[in-house]
Amino acid sequence: MKKFLLAFSLLMLVLCQNVALANNAKIIDRVNNPADVKKLSIEQLDLLAKDVREGILNRANLTGGPLSAELGMVEATIALHYVFDSPIDKFVFDTSHQIYTHKMLTGRKKGFSDPLHSNIGITSNQHESKHDFFILGHTSTSLSLAGGMAKARDLKGEKYNIVAIIGDGSLSGGEALEGLSTGATLNSNFIIVVNDNNIAIAPVNGGLYAGLTDLRLTNGKSDKNIFKIMGYDYYYLENGNNIADLIKIFKQVKDTPKPTVVHIHTIKGKGYEPAEKDPEKYHVVAPHTLDNNGASKPKPETYMSVTADYLLAKKKKDNRIIAITPATPDVFAFTPELRKQMGKNYMDVDIAEQNALGYIAGLATNGAKPILGVKGSYIQRGYDQIAEDIAINNAPATILVFVEGISNWDAAHCGTFDIPLISNIPNIVYLAPTSKEEYLAMLDWSVEQNKYPVAIRVPYRPTVSTGKKDTTDYSKLNKYKLTHKGEKIAIIGAGSFYRLALETKEEIKKQLGFDATVINPVYLTGIDEDLLNKLKANHNIVITLEDGCLDGGFGEKIARFYGNSDMKVLNYGAKKEFTHYVPLQESLQKYHLTKEQITEDVNQLIK
Image 1 (tube, rainbow, N blue to C red):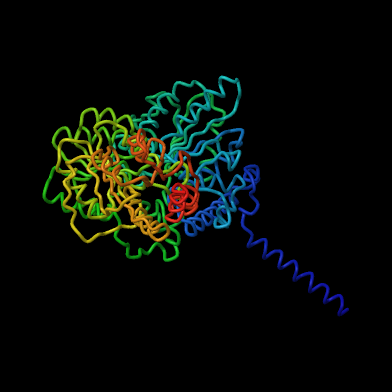
Image 2 (image 1 turned 90 degrees about the vertical axis):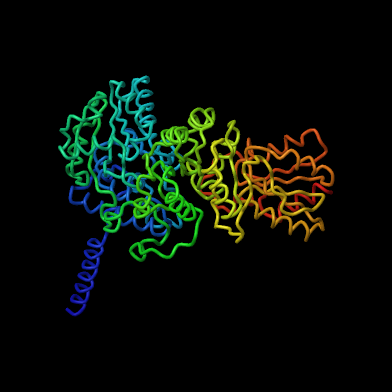
């Protein structure tokens, strides 16, 4: 009897433990592919949404990255996978800031439970999963991409759904409006899910959003409906975070034979109260931001904060000053409070780089003093406007290029192509400061002069301060600064790589015994022929260092100048390639951008 009671007790203990484990188990543990989502009840889908949010928050806190937009799209993405059949039905996510839930439901949840030991990136990536079709990191592209896929499907006589998912903030981009217009002509299955949370990174401003507001206020019944005007079937859902309602509306449009818009109103930052209250602050977060519920730590001085201080002070003296940004106020370090202080002298033109560049051309031509702040990989979206609207007309606008250079960013945000892009357009003056003092002097000169369009490559490195006011006259174009006079070897270090030039000079002296000349070129758009010719007298080797792509870059201008002489030229910079989350030090080693490697290269050349 005792043995029976003991065995029964052990059995009951095991059963209780199994029940406890079942109660503590997460629904996400049962989801390894979209087919698993379809097996769940509505109640279980709601629990799945909770698990997904925990994964998003975990990843954002451990590795940093996008957050509030990801939280807002959880339910909609679950519903999409419940109704549609990925990857037969194809989803194209705009920007990738709404794709985390999709990744978790398509076999990549380790990237969120254990992101530090996973190679799952933050962007859409067809090399990562058969459920993705593009590497995406820029806004406003999904409608064109998905529209093209739908047309290819029709040409091949195939039948499946094409679904583009785009945020309201991205709709202001020119390509989005072009894709919207073309998509309406398909006369076949083309579904657009508009995730409307009434904010991009910062609050949206353009007239397009007045129409979206009317649609929200009238439950989709307003006559001010750009989608219907273009010819789309239109559906509106006020509670875009309700899974049951989302499933119902997606079932209505699945297999539709017409271009269709499903407009859903969601809450950005949903499920994480600090992000719901301040979605701009939590749009993208640094690692461990959430550990203290987002409590801010004192921030060191940056080139962005230096810019903010300059603009605020300058605006008080000159009402013609206006700071412009295409939905990236962070480049100016402009918090909502600082934006209020700037008042009418600050303008966010929404996600529309082409418009921003054309806009500053108009401002400058009519006597204002515009300063555009834009990130390096975004300015390439407005190449034609730099050339046609600004350069041809010699509009004296100022363009500040931020977040450029070699980095550990994803392929869509490579910041190594701005020098070849900007410096080879006629009439543009592209400056590369090496310190805070140089930067402020260049910025003030650019704002006050009226002869040239000026771009400034703001260093994407810790702030360097010399402590001495820069009094250079930058109107004397293409005059380099010879900062240390030596012989045999000259090192020309552009912008943020000027410090590497100084370090390399010391290493060469230590290892090879030569006292090298060091030059700060200042200008990325021209060459100082007089100085370069003088180097021929007592130099045999010229080294160029640039924090960007070598092909078409600054160093090639120097090499071309010395092409018919005996001068040996060594160009150092990045290869013409897209890098994807490559550690910075690894890239610098690969490109021989260390003082030791450069010195060894010089040694081999001498031998």
